[in-house]
Amino acid sequence: MKILILPDADTAADRVAGLIADRLRQAPATVLGLATGGTMEAVYARLIAAHRAGTLSFAKARSFNLDEYVGVAPDHPCSYWRYMREQLFDHVDMAPGAALLPRGDAADPAAEAAGYEAAIAAAGGIGLQLLGLGANGHIGFNEPTSSLASLTRIKTLTPSTRAANARFFDRPEDVPRMAITMGIGTILNADEVLLLAYGEGKAAATAAMIEGPLSASCPASALQMHRKAVVVLDEAAASRLALRDYFDCVHPGGREAEI
Picture (tube, rainbow, N blue to C red):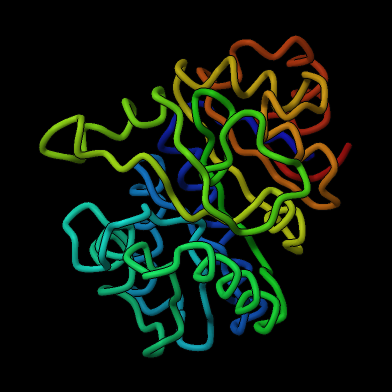
């Protein structure tokens, strides 16, 4: 993994948005893997700004989102489809039908998951996968104990994940208990992976992901096996890294050129 440590959350979001924009400029037909959550809002705001400034187009791109809650329809206020429309899709020039998410309200969620995995494969796979990091080390909704070779499927959410997402719902008990999520194996099949984490609350998971053993207890540790993964952190998220001096030596100031 390439570890880039930036001074704060704003500069970390700047870097991630810049890397996504660079990829789209170099390869406009990139298949993007997209993520949701509070961490991504600043990233999407920067991409929208670049599009409005006329320096970035999504017109040839396609996208697949990581996950969706089981039982939640696309028009539900807390659906990830609604989130993506509000945070990105309604503000850029993606072609109709180019952005896909799992149908949380599918009559057969298992079949929906299998069909979604097949659709990713039919699109040629993910070119650039954007990820956040759960405080318990999850990526997508791959909770601890997830198979490191898993494909898109249904996962039961942990109480800590449901509690973290409760702020988006009227009542904590309204948070769904299951989700359709890309698997860890699906994520590892992406050509490139770009993970953003910031804040002290992600520091323990960050250290486990980067320096801990490869283990299903920290699903994000599977990224140690990826051939081209970039992890962008702020100082707070990097605060528990034992090898911080080395990462600063390789990429001083978060610069990407090897030395």
